[in-house]
Image 1 (cartoon, rainbow, N blue to C red):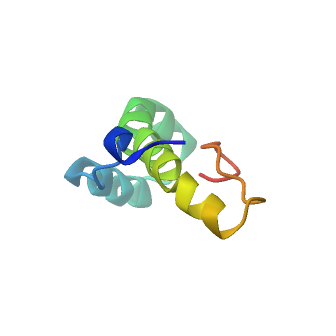
Image 2 (image 1 turned 90 degrees about the vertical axis):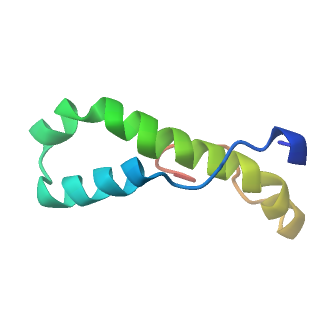
Length: 75
């Protein structure tokens, strides 16, 4: 898992919250597909970074926790 010097998650950006606001206003597949790149950059990658960064901590609580950053599981 990631060491302290390898940590990547720096918090959510303003663009993350803009994406969340916009998808709330346009909750439809056509809009999402047109903005998939925004989702992947400003949501999905940040969530992967977050899950990766907390993995060691979570395993310290319980070794059976799923800690791989996977959509539909930890994301």
